[in-house]
Structure formats: C-alpha cells, structure tokens
Amino acid sequence: MRIMTDQAQNLRTLMQLNNSSTRVITVASGKGGVGKSSLALNLGIALSRQGKRPLIIDTDFGFSNIDVMLGVHPQHDLLDVIEGRCTVREAIETGLAGVQFISGGSGVYELLRMPSSQLIEVIDHLAKLEDVADTIIFDTGAGLSEHAVWLNRAAHETILVITPEPTSMVDAYALLKMLRDQGEKPHVSLVVNKVSGVREAQAVAQGFTRIAEKNLCVRIHSLGHITRDMNMSNAIRMQVPILISYPRCTAAVDICTLAQRYLGQPPRIVKRPGVTGFLEYFLARKKAVRES
Ligand SMILES: Nc1ncnc2c1ncn2[C@@H]1O[C@H](COP(=O)(O)OP(=O)(O)O)[C@@H](O)[C@H]1O
Ligand SMILES: [Mg+2]
Image 1 (cartoon, rainbow, N blue to C red):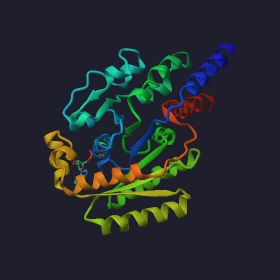
Image 2: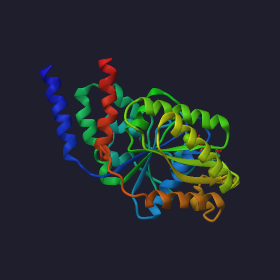
Image 3: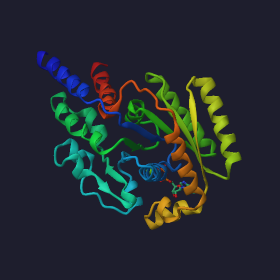
Image 4: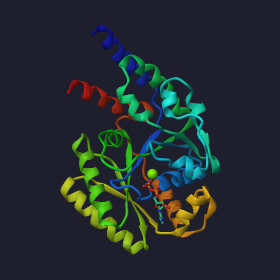
C-alpha cells in the first residue's frame, strides 16, 4: 500500500515537472469513412507549413491509415515505445512535407492495462513528445468504444467530423453524448466534410449544433467544411496527401482555411496542459476502472 502511494506521488511529481503547452487534439467521428484520417494528415501538413510542429498519432489500430496515405512503412509503433523497444524519436516517421507521424498500434490503449509500477518509466518516455511536437493530433477510430471515448475526453480538444449523411450525424451525436456523460464539458470543434458547398455546410453545421447544444448543453465551435472533391480519393490512391498532390483544388483550399481558423482561435486555458496533463487525465481512467 505504502509502495503504491509512493508511486502515485512520484507520478504526480514527474507530471508537475513538465509544464509545456503542447496541445493534444483528437480527430473523431461517430461513423467511419467520414474523412478523419484525410483531415488529420492534411491538417498536420497545413500546420507545419504555418511554422507549427505537429505530430500525428494514428490510433485506429487494425486499419492501415496514415502510413498508407503517406506511403511510408513504419519500423516501429507506439507500443514499441511503451514497451521500451525504441525511443519516441525512433518511432517517428517523417513523411512528405516533413510531417511527423507515429503509428499508434494498440499502444495508447495498452497504457490502460499496464501495471502502475511500469507507468512512471513509460510516462517519462512519452513526455519526450513535448520536445518534438507543439500539437499532437490523434487520428482516432470511429465509434463509441470505451477506450476511444476516453481518449477524446482526455484530449484538450476534439475535432468532430460529420458529413451531410444523417447516419454520420446521429452517430456523432451519440459520441458527443458519451463524452458529455463522462466528466467535464468537452471542447468540441465541428468540421463538415463531403459537402456540395458552403450553403450545405452551414445548414448541416447549424442543424447539428442546434440539436447538440439544446439537448446536451455542449458548446460546439464551427471550424469549417471540406467540399466533396474527387481529388481527395485520387490523393489517397497516389499516396501523396492532397495538400501536396493537388494544392489548389477545392478540398485542399478548404483544409488550409480550416487550419488558419484553427490557428486563429484565441488561446484557451486548459486545466491539464501538455502531454503530461493529457496523460494524467487519460490514466485517471485506469484508476477509475480499478476502483469500480
Ligand atoms: N472531401 C472529400 N471528398 C471526397 N471524398 C472524400 C472526402 N474526404 C474523404 N473522402 C473519401 O472518404 C473515404 C474515407 O476517408 P478517410 O479519411 O479514410 O475517413 P476515416 O478516417 O474517417 O475513415 C476515402 O476514400 C476518402 O478519399
Ligand atoms: Mg481513418
């Protein structure tokens, strides 16, 4: 018991030592296939062009995503970092346009199963993400798995992607409800993808936001839209992100506008800043599971 208390104290001290302001974002959706990975990747590229240092972590394990979209074959994944087989820096792949990316594997979720005795060392490793990135973008799997919901809760903000399809909106609403039910008010920005134009985007965003704000009392900030554009799938086929392969097409311009808007947001005070603040919240889940 005494040992456990000491470990908890050490963990807290370690977390307090590091007070960087790396922002942790998740790109999430209720339904799959709405464009999360495309957005995560190209948002990362747009942010790095604006002088930011983003790092994308693909946590949709079991599905090949960012690595295939970038045409890279990662040698390591986040699980290797967590289990001590490589360092954070060794796990980072640098793709086209210098975008940094780590294949998440099942790494993030394995943290929740790890004995407390190993956590301090792992967190020490992961805290090094602060040195390489000022923005961490988790590309999450679709849906309502408890782990994925918890990842979204722990992040400083969630970019929720919907499309005009009613199924995507209903599933996104269910995800928001779960986020709302599991603690503090989530900070959610909305992106409407695969729209015919700005009018459809506004109608979809307004409809969704009105219902979610009224029924769930969650404030939703509209980040923008991405037009339905064939070049999005052409880029995936070419394994060259759209911002590089078709930089002037409508969807690429939309993503750049989104990125500008994201960067133009007034800085927000977050309760648990940095990677360590994020991990502290994420790992509190572990404690909650143990105690239940
Ligand atoms: N704006 C868009 N216009 C046309 N097709 C799109 C657009 N955004 C995404 N897609 C297509 O939708 C499919 C799913 O995209 P993806 O980014 O893998 O979604 P997710 O990660 O949510 O499953 C891909 O075939 C992609 O080319
Ligand atoms: Mg995906």
